[in-house]
Image 1 (tube, helix red, strand yellow):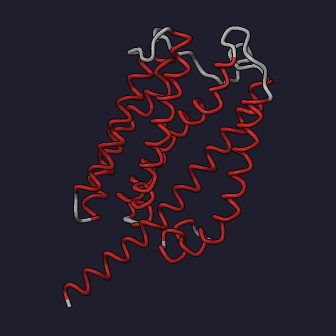
Image 2 (tube, one colour; image 1 turned 90 degrees about the vertical axis):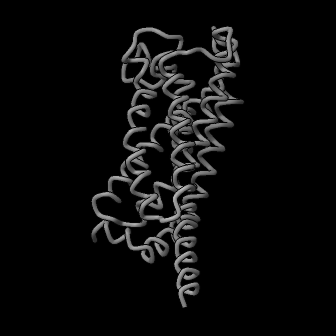
Length: 242
């Protein structure tokens, strides 16, 4: 069976209708276990105290904010190459979800950074790239709303997505590109000296898995809604021409 069969709206709707209930339950379980374990059953850090526990929201949200844009880029490229409407609608559906994760990452980062850095905001390379990525999310959503023809909107937003991907990469790797700024390096690393302690690592990984499934669940739900809206728009256009 080819993966492109799911680019058919009817097949996509049938498959996601079966998958979504179980996916939603698994998402809820992972988020509940990861966040409750992390916030209530892990010790305070010897330097950061209880403030460190915001890591269970900040790190997964920041990861998904970047990865959401990468998913939008992949879906946009599929649209440009193969002209599958489901891929364009999936990219459109992912943008508000990615924006929400970006806002959560910025807010929790400020709450975490203030007691550590003594300021709510710093023009750190990664923070600056993240702020610009937020503006690209807003611009992407606005561009979809501003253009009436859906195919033209999909083409132009795909181009915008490719440009914004530069800042998605920078927001992920800025701390590695520049050896300056206040932002810490990677929280999860293959290097044992950089990686966080196991007592924080396990619930964090569970939280990240929960956020990944949350993103997938919301994108599937929103894509289904976009498909229905496209069908409704097509029916209304036919009635108007009749």
